[in-house]
Image (tube, rainbow, N blue to C red; front, side):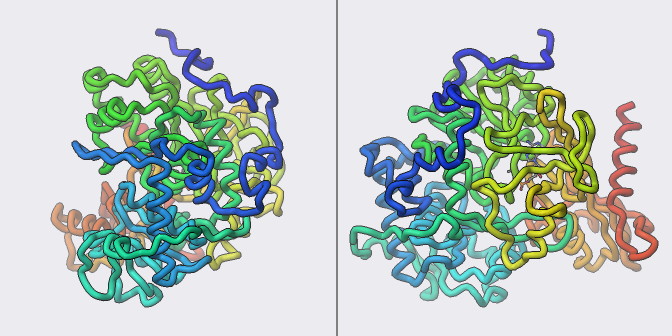
Amino acid sequence: MTRQQVIPPIKGSYNVQSDLAEKQSIAWEEIEKNFSWHETGKVNMAYECVDRHVAEGFGEKIALHYVEGESEWKLTYEELKSETDRWARVLKKHGVNKGDFLFVFLPKHPECHIAILAAIKIGAVVGPLFEAFMEEAVRDRISDCGGKFLITNEEYLQRVPLEDLPSLETIFLTDKKPVSPDVISIPKELNSIANEEEIIEWVELDDGLNIHYTSGSTGKPKGIIHAHRAMIQQYITGRWVLDIKEDDVYWCTAHPGWVTGCVYGIFAPLLNRATIVLHGGRFNADSWYETIEKTGVTVWYSAPTAFRMLMAEGQEALERYDLSKLRHILSVGEPLNPEVIYWSVENLNLRIHDTWWMTETGAQLIVNLPTEPIKPGSMGKPLPNIETAVLDDEGNILPVGEVGHLAIKGPWPAIMKEVWNNEEKYATYFPFGPEWYLAGDLALKDEDGYIFFQGRSDDMINSSGERIGPFEVESKLIEHPAVAEAGVIGKPDFIRGEIVKAFIVLNKGYESTPEVLAEIRSFVRNRLAAHAAPREIEVVDELPKTKISGKILRRELKAKEVEKLNLVHA
Ligand code: PRX
């Protein structure tokens, strides 16, 4: 098969969303009319995601379909409303109020979704935490914003360093038998909670909705807060980009601790009244294919690393399953190689639609609409209503084909409300004034307006679509007694896009043995998270540094690494 430079839409695989088909751009004000608050003035994301569908007569429809191994759990919209109401009452009874920071630290399971939606129902600002976080990652996040409440389970509570978190007032557990009298068992409380009617807290469009911590190239992770107004863009991208219609069974593979798992794993599909598939556990080719077959997934949103891992499993694995219900596939988080798109076209007769956005942007901004041609290697074009540009270092717009800073004209409905307690950081996204938001990505545009990702302008690492701050890893490494200095980079990797590689200088008295290096690696793994632990550690005599300030030159480390790889492949 000859590989096309441009892949046209595949007939029969997409819905033609009538509003988009009629016009190329629909003003945000028009889109707002899809929400009940447009008439009633009563705003709440959880109401629009759940209660509204019940009020409109769709209570019987399946909202969540959970599968893990042999076990399955289906919840209708009616059941999801009742569960989130009941949980919200328990939270309220124990002091959770509008504007409070409430963290959710649970595995991929309907209870995680219920906890998030229940907290939102009563106006709390919810902070979902990734399930694999270890003690320090949990501590950094909860302590930064003085989180007052936490919903977790007995097992995960072992990874919450309570002694370092004086701001935490109440801990809720999803287990029936609470470990100590200081914690509250939600199932136990649910037995005795009164079934009053209204529990929803009406909020303003600009009130806080959720907080996601995200890493950059410097400092600890920053808390990005989104507002309820994000629903306008999350709804419409669910419709135009995910292409969701009511009979769709939709699976987003990300955990809600990452922004994708929250926005496109919960909000966008529920706003569009889809059935959400939830798969417990991490990646496994057979159980992923089996999930698609068993639940009849029609729309699937995942990441390049996962697609590359599936490719590596080969044809046989693919052919063992009936994936014929799948009709639309999307990708996010890291560059999507053309190879992966061709694999999908050749094996599934479906294109993979790349999408670009960031934690800070709150929703997709650069997309491949199902009705448009795809240029493999490109992230797509700006969403209708969104204007992008490629700028030089002074903020001037660069001509077609030139590489520069990817910029988005602000504001748009889902843009972050603030960086928690850090106005200075917020300002760094707008170095040339309020007109242009700078992503920190380098890109170029072609003559048709397609945007091609060219790397980051800073040292942030992207491994399997997960954003890792080199500073965080370096800080952890030098806490280990054997490590004197550390420089951490993203080393290009075929499957994961990048892997975390650390260059370290050892303290006197330590030798570079496999045991010492393995010990250092698990030191980071057990304190931060598995994805942040260096997969490779190289011991060096010294690290390259700037002459004046003595800062480690990560770029130089990276350039040498890339050069080595090129020599190997030459
Ligand atoms: O560098 C870009 C990369 O991921 C960054 C955002 O990371 P995060 O806030 O964790 O959000 C991930 C998913 C919403 C971006 O600055 N990135 C995201 N999507 C793409 C991408 N790089 C290349 N292609 C993409 N489609």
